[in-house]
Image (cartoon, rainbow, N blue to C red; front, side):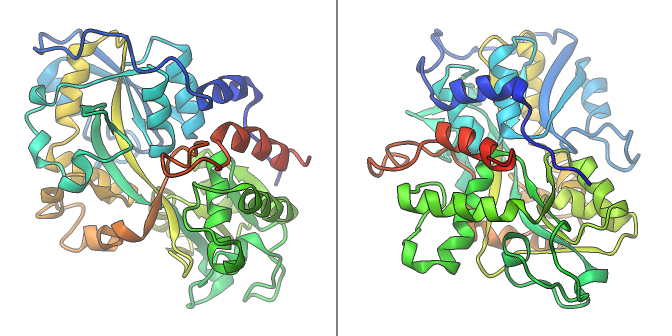
Length: 392
């Protein structure tokens, strides 16, 4: 196995976006009427988020949209939030992006995405009330997208290594230890290669080092931040790969002897469906997580098709099928009822009751997300984490 880092081609764009600037998009406001579709909608999305039946014929929420609207869906898969920000910032070819909370506010602050008119989205009122004005997409009284799905960054592990007892702590990926199969974890764990992973280290230290006084893993003072970096530097000696490509991680867990890693429920589901000895858990320290929003580029080349997708993305059938496929939780609660693929207990299994226990991704700022004045901003997370995984 080899180590893999953040692509240098997007680092500059990441740092610039992390610094913010420019304010919100300079525009008259969202459109007031949806017209005929332009024939295409282009979406930047996480792997597994826009399925057309190619991977598995049972999971297809694209074909029906294309047939009913005449809008053909094109997808650009991104592996990290920083890649999404870079793609949306550097190109006007994209209409929509499924942005997590560590990207959405940067896209708003940078003027990259536009306010959406929820009156043009008939399904808007079906969205979970906890998400309709969530702070990662609702800013200054304006909606900058429609909630899509949410969930936790789970600890995925090999049951041949751990047996019937799930690991109870994130220490199995952060600290050198002997695993239940009698071998060291060195070289057998993975870590996410996005800078937001600093928050995972901070969340672990919140419990492991209570003397640091960490209360929010995205609001770190200098001492807390340096302790998190120190943990990550030590972890580097254990990591076989820094992952961001979900399918590469699936391959690694299948063929490369990986024992444990932070992961998404998507990979867990794919591996389990394939009969691999894989399970997942949320350890005692809790987990970071994501609440994703479908946001619209300020210069979207196909705005009418984009609005049609925004509404389509909220229909209960799509929401339930996607939750079953990805292991996520729908943003539309009614999707939890009567979906054949999700099943009667699917939303509970996927963690719908964990909403208040997840530390959802958000962009760290100097003003501690508006609560103080001495937090380490995201631009430093970017450069420092790149140095960590690069061995510096």
